Length: 78
Image 1 (cartoon, rainbow, N blue to C red):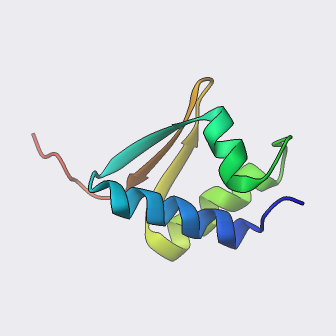
Image 2: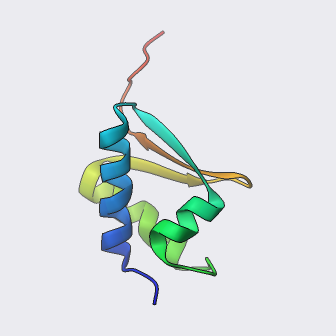
């Protein structure tokens, strides 16, 4: 059974925090394993993004090859 949005977001935050980096990428197979999902369809992606932003100030984006998780702050000023 798929994990809840709250559990997924908590785990994404923990992975980012433990990495020591301001941004991480996860391959889709790793993301599916983390979330115990086999299919990823609406409205779940948007729910994860909203929860990550409101709870931890994280940006979650979905690419073709990876899922990106980053802190929503200027961690590399130019």
